[in-house]
Each structure stands twice: as C-alpha cells, then as structure tokens.
Image (cartoon, rainbow, N blue to C red):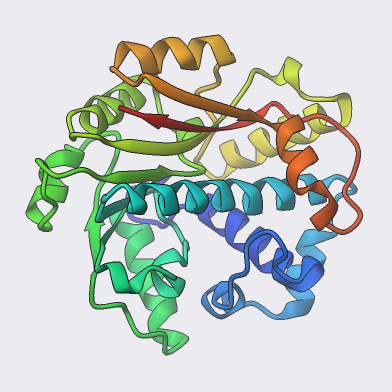
Amino acid sequence: MKPDEPSRTALIPARQRAAHQLLDEGSILYDPFAMKILRDDEKDVLGFANAHPVASIGRLFTAARSRIAEDALSGALKRGIRQVVILGAGLDTFALRNPHGAREMRIYEVDHPATQAWKRERLAEAQIALPLRLAFVPVDFERDDVGEKLAAAGFQQKSPAFFTWLGVVPYLTQDAIGRTLDYISSIPNAEVVFDYLEPPEAFSDELRQLEKARDEQLKNMGESSVSRFEPAGIRAILRSHGFCAIEDIDFQQIASRFGRAVQGLAPGHAGVHVVHAKH
C-alpha cells in the first residue's frame, strides 16, 4: 500500500460484513455498525456481494473468522485477560459493539496511520462515538516496532493479552510476520487468532482463477498478497515462537459449521484457515 493512503483492502471485509447483515441477517456475526461505518448505499453493497458467482464464499469466511476470534476472546476473558489488541483493525467494529463492557477490558486498535485516520473520519461522519476504553495505535507493520507503539499507548506488556490479526498475514512479508509473532510471544499467557492462505493449488479451479484475478487487481492498487503457507509450516512457525496450544480451522470445517447461515453458498474449496494459538 502507498504510505500516505489508507489500505484499499480494508474495504473488502467491511463490505462483506455489511453484505452478511443484508443477505444473511447477521446470522454468523451480528454487526449493527457494519453499514453505518461503511457509509455505502445498500444497493452498492448488494452489487458488490453479487458481483461474482462465488462471492458468497468470501462473505462466509469474513463473518466466520470474526466469529471464531470473538468466541475465542470470550474464553480468554473468562481466564482473566483484560487487554485486547486488534492488529490491522481496518474498519473492524468490535470495540463499538463490545458485549463484554462490564469486564472493563482495554482495547487497542493497531493499524497503518493513513488507514486509521480514514477510519476515524468515517466514524465522525457517521456520528459514531468512540468507546472510552479504546486506544488507536498507528503502526506500519513493515517498519515500526509494534511493542514500542503499544507501550506508548498504555499497553501493559507484563500482563496477559488477546490479539486478533485478521486479514493481515497474507499481505506481510515473512520477516514482518516473524517480528509480530516474536512480540506476541513476549506477552505472558498471550493468545492470538489470525488467518492465512495456502498456496493457490489448495483452491478449487474457479476460486483459483478468482484469486489470481484478485492478486492482479491488488498489484494494480499497489498492494499484494505476498505470504502463503502450508498448514504444517504454520504449525512449525508457531511452535518456534513458543506457542503450544494450536487450533487450525480449515475452510471445510468453517463451511460445515457456518455454511448453512449464508444464503446461496457457492460450491468450491478455498485454501483459507483461521488459527487460534496460545502461548
């Protein structure tokens, strides 16, 4: 992405979340802020959702990965964690609809400075008030030290924390991914939920062609998907950083668990995974 511009890829999951509310009544992830923060017309969102025969698969995955992350967070809160870090927050709305307010947790949204400024403009335009216990932390994952930026925002590095890292890993270099995992693993009793892509061969033919076209589109916008992993490779990387409890949820499991909640779910197999790991 360009240094002075917000990430255009942040719009894609935001539109998918909004489409999930319109087409599926938020049956996987209910989000009353999805349309408000997007600031798009319903007709435009539905047009986006129906632009390709297999677009429903992306809608399913976007809703499911957030639901998996938020279910895991509920468990972490029961174990006493009170710090939540949303890495690459984009237009994420969890802090606005947080159902755990009584637990007095602190939420840190970490994202590229331009993307974060763009989000704050959208919130202001929609007249959406910011939660008191939300901190915005501007970070360039390829250049900045995440730990330093979080500490400056008040994050307690000696206290347990839960990290979500959705829709980010495929766009980072492996060095940046390693540095971020190094930092997460330095936090006591840390947990993280993130998603990753397998190589193109793991996708069914139609989805593989769609992924190829999307990669070309991203390159034209100055962004690209640069890191893909085999499941065994992800497990090895996580273990090398000291994560011992690793749950890797593949697309077949997601489709089996949530697929009936998405209208007109297209057939096909996507090489997408959601991982929940504990240190």
